[in-house]
Image 1 (tube, protein in one colour):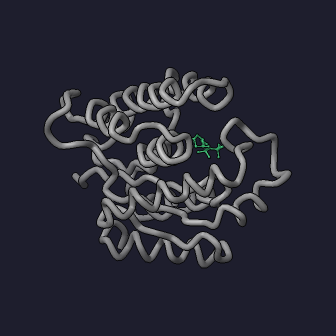
Image 2 (image 1 turned 120 degrees about the vertical axis):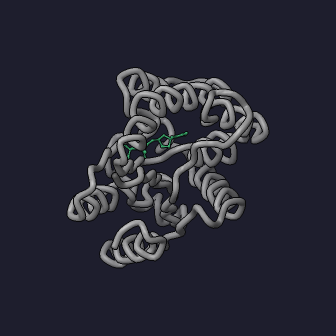
Length: 214
Ligand code: TYD
């Protein structure tokens, strides 16, 4: 049986990751892999309810962070861990790096507290020791916040995060850059300001270079 594979996809709103996640699912399926396409916050019935609250209701940054990690815990236990145990490929639209980027860098919430929550939620046995569940690879769609703002303008009714000012997304982008710098082996940076085909080719080449797709 193949080993389970866990890939996450990150970037500021408007970075354009969604279509590429679908395409990558197709590439894995073409090689005979079973793919679980999922997202955070969300991916389970409970976590989707938490998503609706976190994305729409006003709340302070700690409440927001706790909801994100509560959703993540349920998602890990119900969906991600069982899929990896079966040997499936899990493609997850956002994961913990988003909490560090949005609630941490974007909203200015304490990164040490987020790191503690990360250890609790992603600790294999639910305690703050031992190894953490992290994606094997995180594709980070890096885009200038000014370009992202142009792409988002008028696209649809914005949620709580999408309606934030450009300065917020500049902080979120720097949050992603800091997470990538702290764990360069896990991150695949993709220059998301290119035409869609070029972005796709860069993603595919990066995933192949790490030996995850032949
Ligand atoms: P997103 O993934 O962009 O989905 P869609 O394309 O359907 O809008 O939306 C999720 C939003 O939630 C996005 O603005 C980032 C935010 N978010 C956080 O603030 N913290 C988190 O931990 C996660 C996972 C997402």
